[in-house]
Image (cartoon, rainbow, N blue to C red; front, side, top):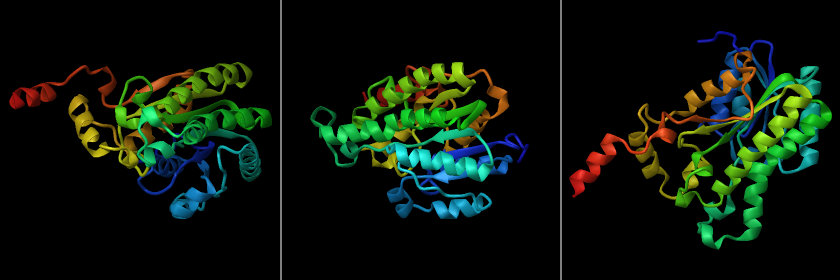
Amino acid sequence: MSTNLLKGKKGIIFGALNDQSIAWFVAEQAYAQGAEIVLTNAPVAMRMGAIQDLSKLCGDAPVIPADATKEEDLQNLFEKAMEHFGGQVDFVLHSIGMSPNVRKGRHYTDVNYQWYQQTLDISATSLHKTLSIAMRLNAISEWGSVVALTYIAAQRIFPDYGDMADAKSLLESITRSFGFHYGVKNKVRINTISQSPTVTTAGSGVKGFDAFIKYAEEMSPLGNAGADACADYCLSLFSDLTRYVTMQNLFHDGGFSNTGVSQSVVERFMREE
């Protein structure tokens, strides 16, 4: 149901690959709530995915290729987006993450360090570059909002998440640091959402992911939050209802982050004794 929560707002959404992507859900719901959007992804991801189909679902939203690790691509993206909108953008979703080490099964204690640098650059430093160029171009409006997606492996060890955990820790640190400076300069809000394990193309590349989703479901008093619910949360942070929320890592995980153990998990181990 549309309430025009984002009516009149304009935004850029990074990372929609296919209809499993959280960014896909965010784009559809932002458009349904009255926003105008520009879609972007790396050229290689665009060839693999279905972003043109998403564009059609969102009123033929422009699709501007951009490798978020390349400053020249990001500058071109913001310049073309502002040209399309006729002014600044009001919100940005950073939904970018990839680890060659995880994809190729390299254990955390034996990573390929060239791939490790790629993990950090793609999954975290890309946010710093995005914000730096946006600030330089004065591309984000006063009281604008930037949201990046993260995971609780930034705070707790999940062995098979590998070097992506380091990337998410860096992503959250960038959010705090840049959130301070951009807030002082132009009242731009920057937050991360720490989402439940969610079935996406990226998530399914993590070893044992299906089993962990079941475990998280049992551990969370409200159950896992789905991609559609995550999109709702993103939209609330893009809206004017959260004008004074910034530099936060916001858990959206059904209570998993504050649950030591659930009764159902205890009972399962008792049955195995």
